[in-house]
Image (cartoon, rainbow, N blue to C red; front, side, top):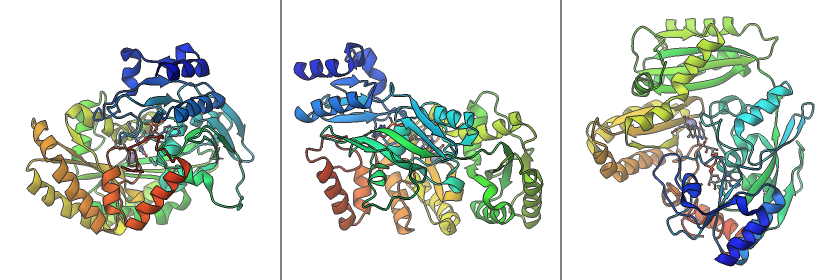
Length: 470
Ligand code: FAD
Ligand code: MLT
Ligand code: ZN
């Protein structure tokens, strides 16, 4: 072990191999606080060649390695297990924006660049990098790629895998694959870039990426809409699509329980509507500087929705400050749920046509498992993706913990029965690896294991994450 630490120090410099408990602490517990592990060391390389040397040293000594970006993942994939045998490889020092090409519509970045910094670099070139997550001030592009992150702009621009053109990856044996090509067209065999997207650090360490840029959208029309039910939210989605076409960029849902938590715990949060509603939709249209009809389109579609009964009321943002206040009602939910106490997260996708039936049926089932449990339901309804999270009955966190397995099984079984997915955008990590294997066919699991064994025959890259066994 001492030999390995010495080799790591010589690869990245003494200051960047952390072993003191205080230095390591933040790297071994996940954002939710449910996954707490131990690490042999946390290593912070500053360049791709250093990553390669770290990976080689770990491969030669058969030391497990956990790649880590901003450590904002929600499924425990970026932290080690409790054995204390793994090295955490943190990409946080690799923060260079290598190139921006506004005409080709590409930006080339180190994997450790924080998402908000990619957005800012794109904006500085009068372009848009559309991915947007509540964690964008801390999560990294490497983590976004490794989890195939979604967020609030998927409806218009797609998941992370639709935003990437090429990657640079350090393979489990320490070789570097330079696939940093910004080509829109490249049919020269298996798509290796896409193989690494969503692989959650189990196939290699992403060190660089070429991402797609889009025309800037400086104009916005934003509304917080009260809707009576999930069914009417889905009808409103149809109306919004008909009226606004390509301009519809966000269509998010939240139940009253979620909004109540934001109003109770987020400083400055205010309910923009006079009367409470069971459900809300955050709806946004975005356009270029010359798209000056967005406000009128929004007014027209809201008017039609109110007349049809698919919306009962709406607040329209009249200024950037009002826009950000409406957004905070949605984006604040994850944070305030933690403040409220024990939480059980579920990140599910359902066919959009089935969302209302599924949600209506789920409530009573959960009340039977744990009377008083509080569904805090929100998410990206335009993508069929609900964060079907649960808070404990008031003051009974231990009861939620005790019933967690039964509650999750009830939800996942119902998702499987509706041909949905038990992980829409957060990945599998340590939390859902076993469940995913149970719901997938043997053929699918065999194929995934074959890919894993081919690239990482000694199961050193993030063992226990995504697949429970190699
Ligand atoms: P980490 O948490 O550090 O790691 C996540 C996974 O990626 C781990 O398996 C890790 O091993 C692997 N990994 C990290 N970097 C690399 C690399 N360079 N090479 C190989 N593997 C790597 N997610 C969504 O999809 N949509 C949302 O709307 C959303 N909202 C969120 C809001 C909040 C408040 C929070 C806390 C999280 C949210 N997330 C969301 C989850 C999270 O932010 C994303 O999963 C994000 O992509 C993780 O990035 P990260 O850099 O923090 O990765
Ligand atoms: C979000 O969309 O806010 C996150 O993905 C959900 C979560 O925190 O569960
Ligand atoms: Zn989400």
